Length: 378
Image 1: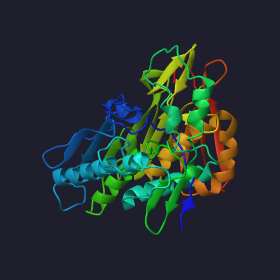
Image 2: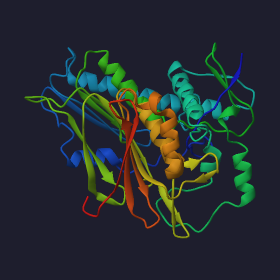
Image 3: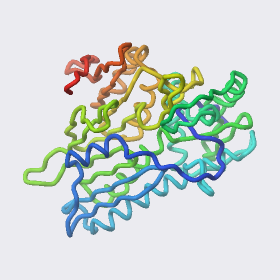
């Protein structure tokens, strides 16, 4: 039986072909290089760098990764896995599942690849979990704005915004579980998995190489990371990842030491525009139909298993903002944090200053919130 779904995040204009615009070097990867986070490779290891999903990707397979395959072959497998996700889920791909769905008329069923199905079902789950703050059908609204890091004078008129918002709503995405088919309830809707697909691509690449015995590796797609095992050495050490200061590109706010975890960051400083003195980021609040402004300058989520979940959660917390994050965290604490999830949120105060809030569970299983101002010297 067809079912009605729910989902969340931003998307681009309707699925017409256009030249991809590569995003700037992602927040985490940019600082990780400066911190010596990337192992550079030797005769027995491999580092692969390539462009994909309108951003940059890096895969590092060290010598002694644990696999019987050469590191270069493992890097090939990981890159192929990332590119497969892109080919299936890009809104601009020639025969991608997402493009075929977006070009289909309302009521027409589109069968999708099992990988696409997994991601769409996760997107709908996060839509429900966030009570609508995460929505992958927001594309008609996002297409009205240009997030080109410049000052803009124009703003969509009320009627144009209202018409676009009528074509948004994950509950209008229908799905048939038995046939892995998707359909729209009305014409003109757009599915964009941009807030979750990069995280899944990272997970998929990790899954593929782990099946070949890999124990230690780094996979980075647009700043979404999986850190398999530890950094090789005597003794082995955690991987070191730097979180960038959201208002000073050259500064590292703090360094995380992680082993076997996933990391994702969303923020207001990579893709944005300025209108009448206010900065608007590329994430749209599905509830208001407007780009986010103020609130969270960045959100970094550390997850023990899933970069997809870290990716979705980071976007969700950005949308919720300072007024609703605490309530959401308390409501979902047991489910989200019981396995070791951490969230580091940088909030913009009325005076423009930053506050750092970290959420995790204490030893008794209660939600712990650390709240501190970010000093000038940090």
